[in-house]
Structures are given as structure tokens and as C-alpha cells.
Image (cartoon, rainbow, N blue to C red; front, side, top):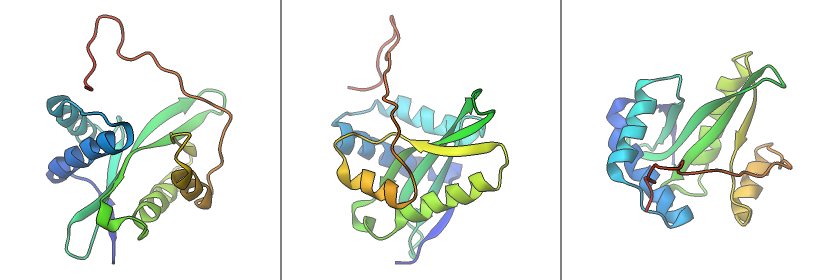
Amino acid sequence: MGLTIRPATAADEAVLVAYNAAIAHETEHKTLDPAVLAAGVRAVLADPARGFYTVAENDAGEVVAQMMVTFEWSDWRNGWFWWVQSVYVRPDARRLGAFRALYREAQARAAADPGVIGIRLYVERDNARARATYRALGMAETTYGVMEEYPLPGRTSAVR
């Protein structure tokens, strides 16, 4: 399968929303509020300061994979970390190099920007296959864990 990697556009909104809903269901067994999810996707597409989506298209022009990158400033290192998020590869395109191609594109873009100092992502502790994939791409596991307070007091969750 040939793949074309390109930036997502507003025309990709419906597939990005669908794939994000699929990620939440597959990985965390959660159903996202469709209106909140669509607004979140539109916000990234409309404002590059929030991040960007990259998609992989097959030879038929179908989006078969997506990846979002967001940004974190590191005062300790005086530079930007890019966070890989919202990765989804359609089941029929898995294990065919779609994520690798998306990641390599992000790597190349990050390397071209002298302000970017690293790439990070979250991975579930029990997802051995994903961890092996990320290690094969050159990533290393850190000692950091993730803690959160969500939703904030007095707010409702967009996840059911």
C-alpha cells in the first residue's frame, strides 16, 4: 500500500472526529461527546498554536491514519517538546507502516525547527506492542508518570 503523508485540513474534520472517537473507544472504552469532540478538532484545525494534525492517505485517497501534535514549552531546556497524540490507524492499514510514516514526518518537521528539542507521547503501561513500536522508532521510556485532575471542580466531563 502506497501512502501519502500530508497536513490535515478542514475537509478532513469528519474523519478526524470519527477516528478520535474510535481511539477513545478502542483504548479506554470511552464514548466521547460528539459535539465537544468536533469542536476540539475544529479548534486545532483553525489555530496552529494549538497543534496540528497529519494524515496518511492510501492510493485510493482515503485517510487511513492520523496523528496530532501539540506543544509543551520546557523552561528547563529552553525549547519545545512536541507531543504526539490522537494516533489512529484504520484496522485494515495496521502493521503496514502508516504510523511509522506519520512519525517520521513529525520527526523531520521537528528537526527542521531549531526551537523543537524533543518528541514525547503517552503510552499505556500495558500496551507492549505500542511500546515496542515506539522503541523501534528511537524513543526511550522515561521515569515520568502522568497524574491529572479532570474534570476540574464544578465542570462536567466530555467523556461518558
